[in-house]
Image (cartoon, rainbow, N blue to C red; front, side, top):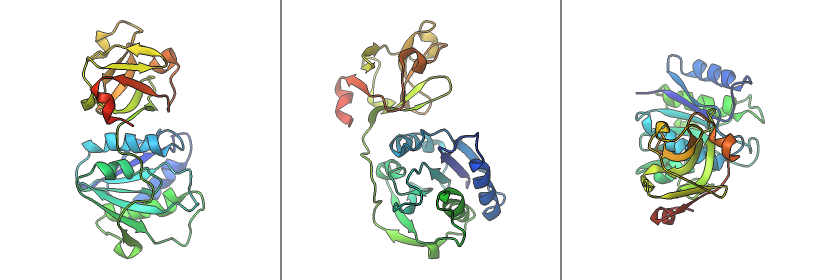
Amino acid sequence: MTMLVLFTDYGWADPYVGQVKAALSREAPGVPVIDLLHGAPDFNAHAGAQLLDALCRSFPSGSVFFCVVDPGVGGPRQAVVVEADGRWYVGPDNGLLSIVAARAQAVRYWQIAWRPEALSDTFHGRDLFAPIAAWIAAGQFPESKLKRIEQLEVRFDAADLPRIIYIDHYGNAWTGLRGGLMTGEAALEVKGRALPYCRTFGEAGKGEAFWHVNSSGLVEIAANRASAAALLGLQVGDKVSLAGPAADALH
């Protein structure tokens, strides 16, 4: 099934999401547009890359992801299209798409050679990435506007990342650790505090912090009916540490 999936750090308080949707609708009328996340950590392509990989798995083959966390917009970074395991990703070559690409079984890369006549220096999402993503989603692959390349220029380490990569509005702190690495016996420490494992929120006492594997498959620091971020003073980028064999798979 073809759908356009938006993953950005644009937020909802500004006009950027609406402007992008207008550009997508103009070039791919009738294609469903899904707002996956507009609260990716600002300017943080590394955290965004880990989040994108965790969140894209539930979307069907053929989905087209419009991906923008792009503090280098207008600079020398390239614009790219990636096809990874049947899904398409359009965005900057700043590492944001590199985790998805590195963990894929089958992957192809293109550099976007085309530039529209009206291209804002600071809004490539609307003017450059949106038309390309829309044409792909509409079944009009813009081959003449792309150039095949062998690899991305910026590639993050594809190992799991023992840092907080996202904090949701509940105050749950998502880490870059996939839950399959860990068991209930593993020790997770953050800010000098060792946290117990609980399978669900209800297994913890009211206001008690713990770790669990969230619905996106990532290790999450949470608290029962409270904000773990406020309780523990957590921020995106904070390190977490593990004891046990799982630590060997991390960087």
